[in-house]
Amino acid sequence: MSYEAVIGLEVHVQVRTRTKLFSGCPYDYGAEPNTLTDPVVLGLPGALPVLNYEAIRQGIKAGLIFGCRIAELCKWDRKHYFYPDCPKNYQISQYDQPLCRGGSVEIELPGRSRNLMGEHRQVALNRIHLEEDVGKLSHGEEDSLVDYNRAGVPLLEIVSEPDIFSPDEAFAYLHSLQMHLIYAGISDGDMEKGQLRCDANVSLRPTGSSVLGTRVELKNLNSISGVRNGLAYEITRQGKVLRDGGQVEQETRRWDAERHISLSMRNKEMADDYRYFPDPDLMPVRIDEETLNSLRAELPELPFRKQERYQADYGLPYTITSVLCPDAALAAFFEEALRHYHAPQAIAKFVANDLLRELGGSESLTLQTMPLRPENLAELVRLSEEGKISKQLAQDLFVEIFRSGEPAEALINKKGLGQSFPREELIALCQKIIAEQPKPVEEYRRGKVNALNALKGPVMKETKGRADPQLIDRILRELLS
Image 1: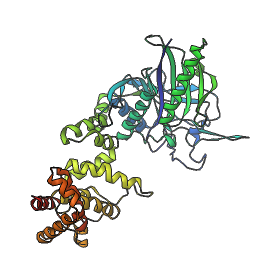
Image 2: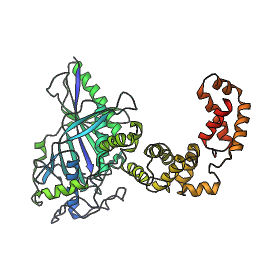
Image 3: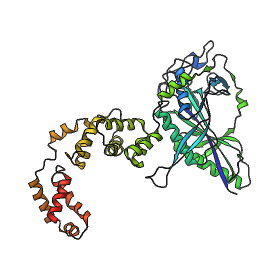
Image 4: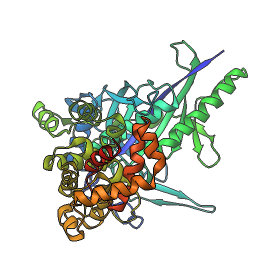
């Protein structure tokens, strides 16, 4: 019998706020352990929580992005469990009246060719709710240490329906989720800093069946690639159990990324085990239409729609838009350069190729700290498009401008690099190259037009890129006619 996988993902996303969800205590990744706590975070007697409304605003924005139904009234519940990372022995969350219900996340699956947009589809969501984070446990050989700095940090728990059917779809879903949340400024989404964490529920059922199989929860998935690898292993493991005549047990398993296996942790908890009840210290939150309209107005153009616009309005290929559009800051740099000089294809190539190459090779510079500004790039492209410098020289100058931020025209004048090579000297140089290169000359005269490039290259090299390539082309054709 053949089986198919059914996957649902529970993603915890750290919300970008200055303070914690129910306290004025700040949070900073990497701070000394247990230095960012207060009586509310630690649940000390008499300490009362106060809601951080910015977290609510960010949660609503996430719901609007993904087309959720925003609750008119949501409330807070205590989720009880006893574990060292939970200082109060309960976590404040949302149970039966969450902030958002329904909605979906658009995903893109790889196309048959890297030059084509892949297939897009919607993955259904069950809910999005807010809750506070717990502390962090570090296990050693002889002891375990707990750091409560993270306790109380606002989290969005985004729960999908069992609407994902392969590890590749799970990978695409997490990539899209992360991209959209970063775009809207809701989260920094850095998995290495624990700002986006994922648990996966996976089951197998006979191919074509609509009945879900026994699900297993997979934890400790610390990267998007780790989710894909863990799911691939778990699907194979469950398939072997079923084909051998066994039954999959409902349990929680831990993914061991080093050994590439999953290990049993415990039986899966049910909702009743947490003894949810409304938090008596927090009032429900009512959300009005005015708030929703205000937050809708703050939403940016989202990446897939931006990609469609770039292709339609600027004629940019998928290979370029798939680089520009997932990064909001990179797309903003491109659009700002366009405002200074409208040459979308030339500017996009510089951004997607040269700019990212230089950033990738720099240990200290980022898009925000590099000296190159959008107007510098626009000026360089303008000079190239107007024929004042060759395209090769423009690429060479880009490296210097990236590091110095010096205006292109000033740099060209300082180095004496403008295309001012006299025509008479250029004719003499072309004659010299023709005499030295009989093979491409013969090929050109036999009708192989591309052989002319073998002559143009040496001429450009001799002139150090200062000659006009179009003028060289015309002179060579005249001399060889």
